[in-house]
Length: 437
Image (cartoon, rainbow, N blue to C red):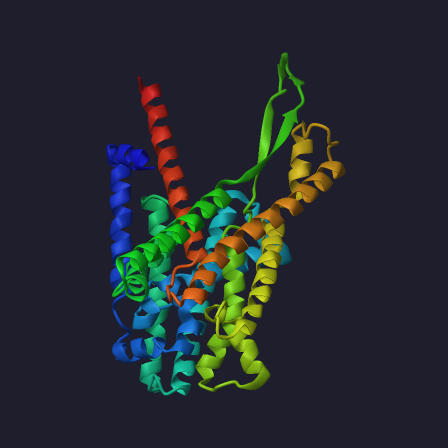
């Protein structure tokens, strides 16, 4: 990894792109510290430090790099864009017109991008208005026409600006812009989390206990990181053989290839979907300012990951079962809309390809479906393990840190994806140099 980065900085074009990305990410972090005009930043920070608010909004705050705590102009981060992208992707299945655009090459993708942008602005408006109403009901925000306009305009503009900055990284920088924005926001919380761990488990302890605490902390972080690396890189390669055929007077074909099926086909999407659904009831109740008691109150507490593995109330850990079911369900669901075995089998048949030992057509489709079922399940189990380890550590030892399995998966995936893109750019440059000589 370090060798790739070192070699990349020797290339002027790649070095310029990397510096451009750094500049954009600095802008993102500066914007996360600018509060919305007319809002008491300290009051909001104190509110979000409360236990109920922290459990309800910790998922959003982790993705905004503390922008939610500060109620900054970037408080919404790029979550509206991510939601809009997922919605458009799902609608391509239900709406034939959108499906045609998806298959229409570059022009179709550009039109889908425009639709995603407009939907992002609409979702930003909706979420910012909901925040005004919710915080106004709790007397956290003084509701007035002018105040609502300022807050809604600031949050919507901030989310739209981050979307534009992410697209600029795609065009003029290195890596996926939206992923890079998420990455810098998550990484910005890591130093504070380390300070929290130090104060809770090391400060004031004997040398032996402090050393043991650091060993456990490092072991958990390294363990989750290694599992994430394995999960991210694991794939099942299905061999494909292409038959020979005559083209003019030449015999072409007869080549061997493979279909790479990633074990973690859904990436971090199943965890994001599951965590969003689990946190949604708590956010709604927090906005109303009411306290839910009785059986419903216990159920809402069960949905909060902050209450799992709590040694004083193990019953709330049952919410973990709901979380696991949601992760597995969304792993299968998301893979079903991103990988079409029927289309793959049909394309293989048209190009003269076949899987050794499997007949082309329906048999190939059935084989791919069978392989996918096992792969998706293994990937979902891996995702659950990676996500649960930090929850166990936080619950048993009351660590109270923001980064978890979701954050680590995003960090590792984005770094690996960016390094691969840098390597491909260097490879293209080497080919160009060879051709020029």
